[in-house]
Image 1 (spheres, one colour):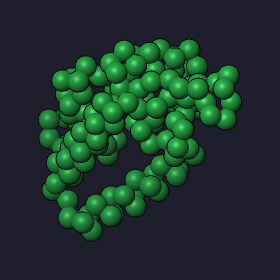
Image 2: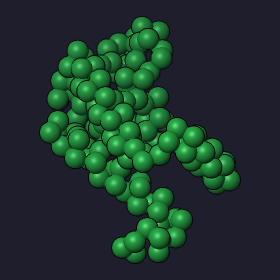
Image 3: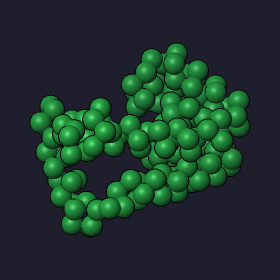
Image 4: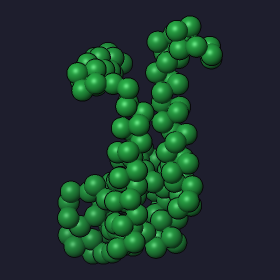
Length: 145
């Protein structure tokens, strides 16, 4: 990658921003012993709107992984005391995944850090610049199909 942003292609610039943001995210997760994959799963559970927690199959779908991989991720979060499995209130044969108190507290900490990280990454942009960048990136994403 070129040393100067002025010499970089648009794609290189977008990738550089994404790479730096991910590097910072990984550094934020390190003190908690979480990988990005575990943190994403924690977020899916935290954002579940059903009120009961997602089933393993729903978690797998949202993470775009196999059910077996979702089970392994839930095992990793459960071993850390961040989630627990409960019987699905609508189908006692199925299990749902819910945050524990520690999981909720960690999620709130990680969300606050995410907001600070994003503010830092885009600190040089004015509100109109941010709105324009959002508009442009939305158009690019829509064009990806």
